Image 1 (cartoon, helix red, strand yellow):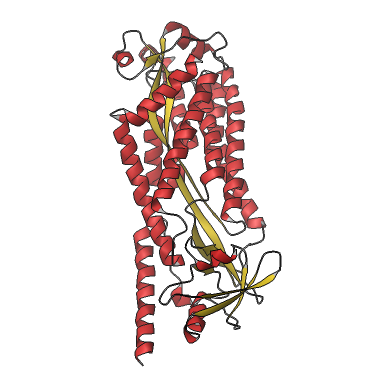
Image 2 (cartoon, rainbow, N blue to C red; image 1 turned 90 degrees about the vertical axis):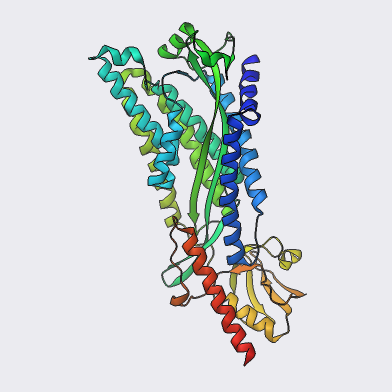
Length: 441
């Protein structure tokens, strides 16, 4: 039991003790600013936010802490231990550097493959130059590396299933002459984690940030020659640090909740498979090379399967002659009081058919904002919703239009949020000026 207590104690230390607590504050601030931009985009697109900035940020931090605890306890139980000079901490640095090349490369599957490849090269050079092998710098146990990455993919999969749909932004595309509605999902979680490091008895870090533990009789669950050598010849210490897990996806064939659950299951399954595949590393350098190759390529294969599945499925949010399908509803929209939900269809407004959100407001203005919405739910049942709509506000309901004018299309660049935001604001301002001129006339 003391093994688990030491693990959790180190995670708690990372949360409340300098200097790691300052890193947590910095990462939390970064997430807050990212979430603030997401909420701003939701308000512009929808007329109201679906989530608050605080809600989005706290869920990432709180669930990240829980995920870090779970992942660390699993690693400790399995007996995943690294040499103090293995450079396992460089995994996060590599992930951040790869993220600048392409955001999805933040995944450990890619940085782990690079670190493992470097380790194998150094081991190979050690056969000819003894100083490389004796130094042990960046020489990491590939089996434990694979298990480490697999465990945190399991944690990531669970986080995605529980929290991956939060903060999703509605998006549109066109296919076969039809406008499709969908969601862009993007989430990050900050995880404080504890890793077992084999330290030399005279290492000063023992007195600074680590806790010495006694080995239980049943431990470790996963035994390797190098791992047992580290355990018997050194002092095992649990060291805390932070990592960031990220998830991004897009769907036009599922609800955001369905997509998060689907993606999470894929990621979780990949993590389980990687832990099993990592056992191949027991068979020498060839086995280690296979594990290193399968890390990124297995991850790419998982993403390809998801993409092909998305392509084969029927689009979910497509408006037809029957009505405009509802893609999103803001948290403060009045229609929520009448149990109107996503996937319902807006059949008419005040008895008139509509083709887009703009036509909805034109009809409401003519009726002095007295609102009668005819809604058909996903079961095909019709109901009327009557209320008084406030002047100069939006319904907080985003519908998928039947068609869009070409001049209203704004190209989206994932790496340039500000330009998209400015384009939307300019578009809204131009529309307001147009309405003002019409009113003056």
